[in-house]
Picture 1 (cartoon, rainbow, N blue to C red):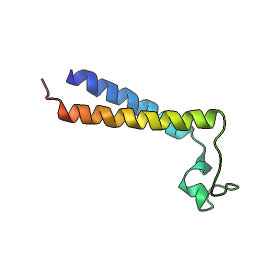
Picture 2 (cartoon, one colour):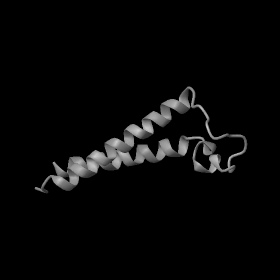
Picture 3 (cartoon, helix red, strand yellow):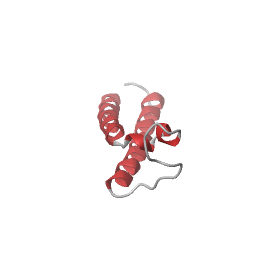
Length: 76
């Protein structure tokens, strides 16, 4: 059981890194403070940006749940 959780956590973390790298640079905090040319305080995500953003949040939640499950469940 513990190996399944660890493998799942590794797979989710790799996909999470890819999703984070796919996001537009100006959509982060650097864009708010003028680091990303063009953006304002409130920028709407559209199309694939919205999907990637939602997927990133979902993957973060899954990663956190897997980490908690790996911590709580006894290693057999």
